[in-house]
Amino acid sequence: MKPLVFATHNQDKLNEIQALFPISFQLISLHDIDIREEIPETASTLEGNAIQKVQYVYKRAGIPCFADDTGLEVEALNGEPGTYSARYAGMHASYADNLKKLMLRMSSQTNRKARFKTVIAYTNGYVTKTFEGVIQGTIATAASGRNGFGYDPVFIPEGYSQSFAEMEAKLKNTISHRAIAFKEFILFLTS
Image 1 (cartoon, rainbow, N blue to C red):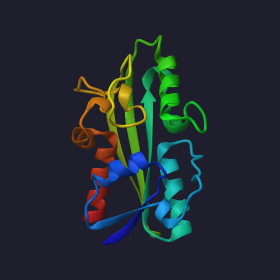
Image 2 (cartoon, rainbow, N blue to C red; image 1 turned 45 degrees about the vertical axis):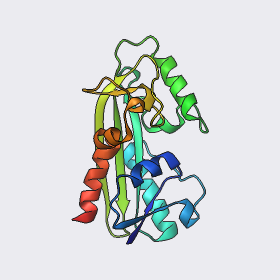
Image 3 (spheres, helix red, strand yellow; image 1 turned 90 degrees about the vertical axis):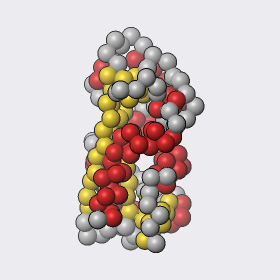
């Protein structure tokens, strides 16, 4: 098995990604390599943040690694929360706090168009490459569903009537922004 570090402290993301990953790779978390501090995310784009994370981890551990940065981009809010999706309501905000702020900002909006975007960055010390996945959709007027995490209870992907949080994990892991980006990434790793 080839060891590969997933540069995240988010256990929900780690669980979702492990379900997508080929068994020929041993997925290692930041916890496994004793990186407990928050990794800087100071870039102005999702791509910049993902690259910043892999460079930080590779410099510390010397093991091939990948990171993702994901953002919900709401048209009526000029692309917010975007790169601030995980900390929309503040640096240590919970999923519920971020969702509450989004729904408050959307309360008077008629344009509900949004998209989820994931950028994955990978480095092995010689090559740094990025992969992108985007899914269009709308923001629901109320949260529904118990699956998923983050903004999943209010994001309804285009062509569906359910939020990500109402979908079975198998369906979400086939159509989501993260799934699209990871399919490209896994193809790169295995070819």
